[in-house]
Amino acid sequence: MAATGKGMVVSQSILIAGSHGQVGQHVTELLAESERTARAMVREESQTDEMAALGGEPVVADLTDDVDHAVEGCDAIVFAAGSGGEDVYGVDRDGAINLIDAAGDAGVDRFVMLSSMGADDPEAGPDPLREYLIAKAEADEYLRNSDLEYTIVRPGELTNEPGTGEIRAADGLELGDGDIPREDVARTLVAAIDFEPVYGETFEILSGDRSIEDALEAVGSS
Ligand SMILES: NC(=O)c1ccc[n+]([C@@H]2O[C@H](COP(=O)([O-])OP(=O)(O)OC[C@H]3O[C@@H](n4cnc5c(N)ncnc54)[C@H](OP(=O)(O)O)[C@@H]3O)[C@@H](O)[C@H]2O)c1
Image 1: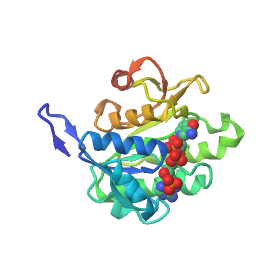
Image 2: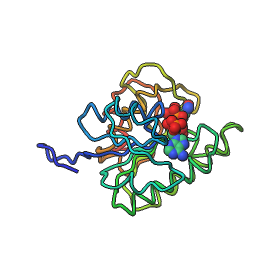
Image 3: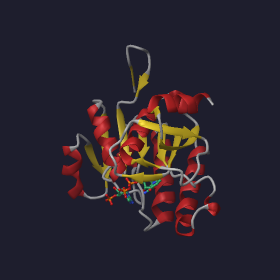
């Protein structure tokens, strides 16, 4: 990490798990644009050129396998990976836990988790999503009980609309009461990385009418 002229700590090298995904690609681009090292974690060697074209520094690793080499030397981690419903316990829960453990072992103490609305109460969620929500809830709980400085961001339904930069954020929003572009989710994850008021916070987000910075500020002071 490096200090800016204003004395704020800025993470310089950020690992993005799931960088090849739809949210992850936005995160990779945003970090590269801000002239930080976006360590773009991908599963396949064949995905590396695409990530380099977005400005990322690719690293090949699978969440279900050894990830130590991916984590080594990073200042922070953004978890934007997901099973897509294929192997929720293997990837969304145990893959996340594997990365959390590797971060702890490597002394990387900042971890921003992309979770999901509904993970606060999986039993109340729709049947097809229940196991996914249980897996996300268990990964979030593991992170909260770790020694890492975490932030857990839980968006509602994701869209591919262009981002607006304006969101709602709160401990609890109403499931189904809106959606949010992936681009705005990515902006929120990136904004959270070095924003200390949201360290240790878990909150939900949807599209709204506050700037991401204001919305995060409000979460941090609530
Ligand atoms: N869809 C929604 O409405 C919604 C709502 C709330 C929260 N979320 C959460 O947001 C996450 C990201 O959404 P998205 O649309 O960006 O998903 P996505 O496009 O499916 O991206 C998921 C990424 O995770 C990677 N991945 C899967 N298994 C992996 C493994 N074992 N090791 C390493 N990487 C692995 C995938 O790699 P490949 O590219 O190689 O397949 C993919 O790049 C979702 O997974 C979900 O948990 C989604």
